[in-house]
Image (cartoon, rainbow, N blue to C red; front, side, top):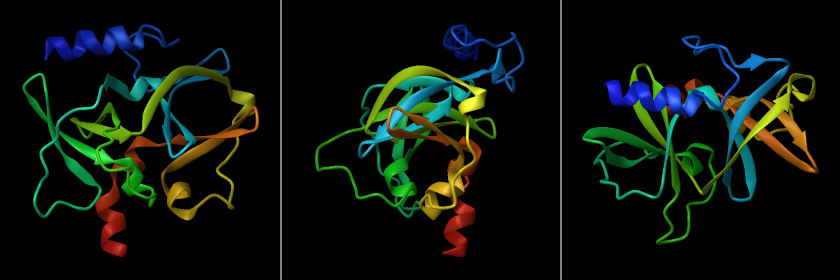
Amino acid sequence: MSEDKSRQVSIRSNAPAVAGERAVQSLGGARDFVTVTIADQVFGIPVLEVRDVLRPQDMTRVPLAPREVAGVLNLRGRIVTAIDVRCRLNLPPRDEGEKGMNVVVDFHGEPYALVFDSVGEVLSLPDDSFERTPPTLNPRWREVSDGIYRLDGRLLVVLEVERLLNFAKSNVAA
């Protein structure tokens, strides 16, 4: 447990946040995001929600799991459920043999690895550039988005981790 806390502090020390205030995402009019990519689309995860970034990992499939569950992996002796974000966003599967990068986040006190094609850099984006999720965005993406930023002709879709991982509710409705 102490290893996890020290890792969180080291990851978060680059973010402009007050120690002990996990919910603080904005100081000085900007928010920091870890950028990730799926099928040439850039997404952002609030940096304060990221515990770890992992290289491609071997995963064990879980029989009868929802289709979004890519499997489980071992993170320092702890079993972590891996979620295929491509599947969650209704995008075509990754090419055979390609493994994605993993971004580890917490959801209800448990670690989850979100599998993306690649992980980019940390961007600090001004609050005044933030826009609400447009109604023209893919409905599945709108369901898990907190908003967007327009970056040099590209769209960065901000992912809300809690909604992204709350897929059991959307599977029941489907």
